[in-house]
Length: 456
Image (cartoon, rainbow, N blue to C red; front, top):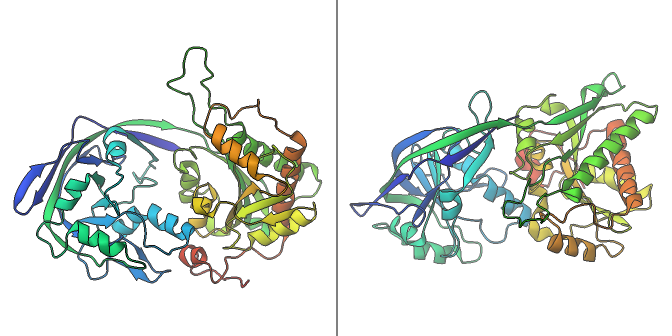
């Protein structure tokens, strides 16, 4: 898959015209702009429009751009989402604001905090952006038409509202009220940008294998079993003699091993699956689900014929687990198959142990789900005293060099987990009925509005 790393070349010039006065904003202090992977040189000036939280979502019946003229303009939106939304829905909406702004016709997006704390200025001003860019020049996370994403200091953000009916402080006060969504309105100023990005193009492999289905009809459908093969590389500030390799033993070599073992079981079973089964080891997951996003946008099989996707990310074979968790279980019927397969091994399906982390939108199944594929992410659950092991791993090993084979891995637990995933994918492949989204699921409504739905 084609990847591009973009970084800022020189010092961009960002000019804010407010109250009839034009001023250059201090780079890295007052303003930061995300480097562009699609335009080396960006020079434009646009009018400003405040658009509430910047949410336009038919599934929720919300369109904060309605009645606003944002075509060719820069939209200013509050960060986050209104209070009271489901955590997974809120996380999804927060991640797709650039796409919503682009659909409304905006050329720029400025996201300001709901309070004076926190900003992406440093990240945008001093960091780089990595994304896939295809042969048509389309990028994964940067929607066509949206030319820049900008972060401002609190002082600069307040100046955007000069001469308007409401100040930034008043807008924030309104947003702080339960269930409130401040209405949008035109701003009086303009924002000017003159910036250059430098690029480094490279590639990374997506590794795929397929077992063709045996059924004359169902073979044209596919069950995806996938994991991600990348981790974090080399620790740049390692001391002499210190281990500097981010091995990623459990995150996610264990997931890849589980996938390969399931594939081996298919091939040695002597019985081909009725549906075709596609195994994918995704790259660039740690950079923002880029491998899965690229495959979902450029699938090697018709995306409409993908019946289900099961993602294997960071199993925890450090204890004798008695339950598993299917993130996404409230949204589609793949979890029914998980429960049926688990019962044959004396396992239960547990509830999401950390709903506040919005795991459903944070792994490689999510880009497939956004394309309408009923998808889940599998974890080993908290049953049989699993919580202390998860807590210790997150505290001491997660995204650290210590995620290696020095851990007390229980290989029989790892084999048991692999067997479970084979049984899940075998059932998905052989069941005459394709999995479906639930009719009352937000994600089913948002991602697959035309598909037939299931009732609970």
